[in-house]
Length: 255
Ligand SMILES: [Zn+2]
Image 1 (cartoon, rainbow, N blue to C red):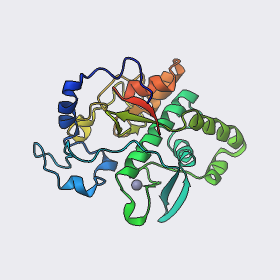
Image 2 (image 1 turned 90 degrees about the horizontal axis):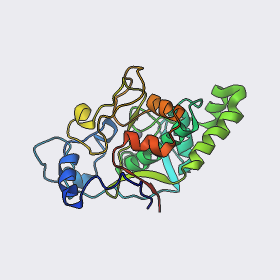
Image 3 (image 1 turned 120 degrees about the vertical axis):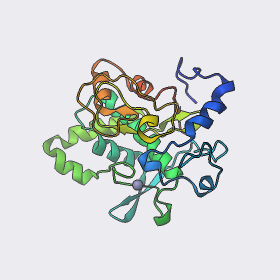
């Protein structure tokens, strides 16, 4: 497990449990609202908040998958995890963005895909994730990309493949669990906390300054893609971008 110097020890061990007890209560990002494993739904609710995930609920394991089952247009397509991540990065972020921003996007996409998969959101149809941005994450095929990119297809394909490969197998974790690495298009100088937008709280989804004034597009929680672009243009690498938007997380390579 690779740790980020200076980021992992902001919590003393003594208060980790307390923070998690509070932090997980009521936290329900839109895509995770219906994905709690059945066992968790019967756990006792703390503080009466809806969609609680009790402290003793099964943790989201930090496990990779070689193949992901992706539900697209009602059909399940199996594909290598890293190919799926490429299709998500291409669908979710402009290919012209700096490499570091695309690399940060790849880590966030990989983390959130495995988080959603572990939660069993599409298990009823034999899938792990779907290709809808309103549910899981947007996904686009290479054929669609070739049509979109035209004469630039070879260049952008290589560029995005390289961004995914540079972060191969890397995910964000918090206290040994996969993080809910949500992201959004842009913010207005500050991101939003999960507590403000969805209620409850999550220690790594707090409001942070972001170097953009483009106006908020999306829920405003987690990484701002425009902010990631700006930070990259200022010289930040993808690790620094992720550490900026996801407070206190660790960058972990899947076993
Ligand atoms: Zn979905």
